[in-house]
Every structure is written in structure tokens, then in C-alpha cells.
Image 1 (cartoon, one colour):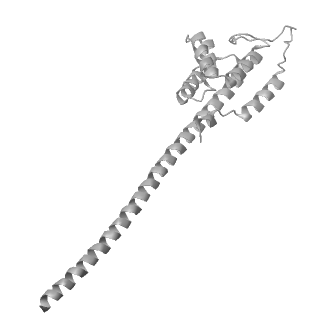
Image 2 (image 1 turned 135 degrees about the vertical axis):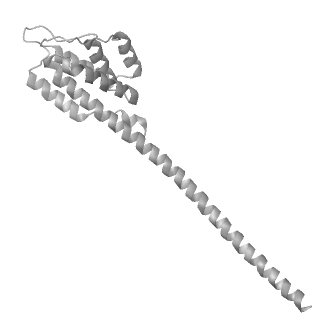
Image 3 (image 1 turned 45 degrees about the vertical axis):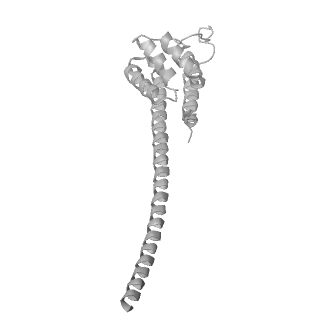
Length: 190
């Protein structure tokens, strides 16, 4: 299976996130009437729009490439809760095993300290990143087993070839022994 298959998009996550949005009453316009459009990195604030901005950021991360993730890591380099969660969301959609492990660590160190309004969302993303990492590990394991099987198959083919050669050599030795035996008999009769 190609590594592009690792670009797994958890349909369950999208469904649950939609339900979370609906249940939380998050709309594109907050209850105060202000617009929930966000630009740049989302902020950890307890506002009507915070879940919407983090979701928009997560959706961008899901579609983003490695170049985008690298840029986000440079924009959010500190150990603040805000920057750790920004990096966790960005790296949580990577197809790189090390980045997924890093995202898991960042989520583990930050979810419990995040605002209550966002905690479920971050927990959901954390579980999704863990599942994606496990999925990736299984794919790599399968690839290794497949390579080992291929190697085993070529070794089996080589063993079969050597067994045929061995059988052929035994046949030739038996023929030579028969010739030698016949020669000895003919010599003994003279």
C-alpha cells in the first residue's frame, strides 16, 4: 500500500465535529452579532467563535502539505499552551510518523489545560491523530511483512533451484558410479 494511503481522513472525526458544532450552537455569526471569520492562527479564548476558528484551522491542516506545516511550526515555536495546540493540530494531520508522535505529545501536554469549550474538540483530534499513527504503523508493518515475504519467496525459489541442481548432480553421480561399476566388471573379466 503506498504511503499516500496514509493521508487518511477520519470520516468519523468530520461527523463528530459537525455534531459538536451543531450542539454547541456555533454559527458563523456569534451571539453578539460579530463575525466569526478568523485569519491566521486560532486563539485560545473563551468566545463564541473559538470553536469555529479552531475547526477552520483543523480543516486547513487536514488539506495542507508539509510546507504549510513547517511554516506553522515557525509561526508557533513557543512552549505556550496556545502554540503547543496550534502545532498539535497542524502536525496531527501529517503523514509523517514522527510528526504524528509529536502531535500526540503536544495534545497530551495541552488538552487538559485548554479552555473547557475547546477541550472536547482537542480530545477528538488527539484520538484521531493516535488512530492515524496506529494506522500508519500497521501499513509500515504490512509493507515490511510484504518485503520479507517477497524475500522469502525469492529464497524459496533459490532453494528449489539448488534442490533441482542437487538432484541433477545425484543423477550424474549415479550414472558415473554405474559406468565405473561396469568398467570394473569389464576389467575384471579381462
